[in-house]
Image 1 (tube, rainbow, N blue to C red):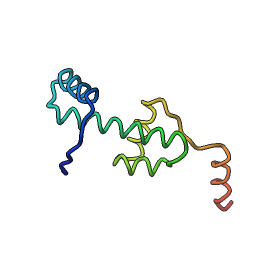
Image 2: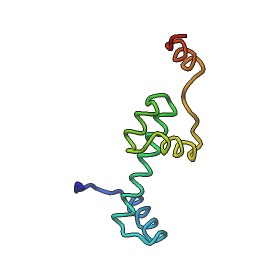
Image 3: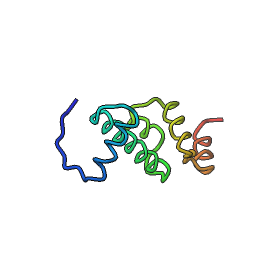
Image 4: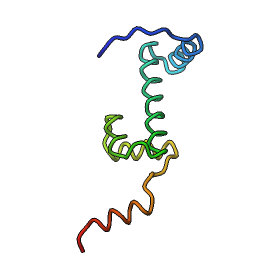
Length: 95
């Protein structure tokens, strides 16, 4: 694990302390948790906008495809595959 030194805005520090108290965590674990959650939202939004495909999202999150589908579903994000994409993929297979 790498060590990083960053300047933390007061409101973010308060959020870290709040989560640490609420979940009885050390502040470092609270920060890791919030950072992970923020990255998951970032990747999910990129997937939703079509900037990432499912495999890329899973790789970035270090999750399996099914775990990624479950996570996206919990966030209310549906697949970003369009009917046109499905038809093109089906046409690529020989009859």
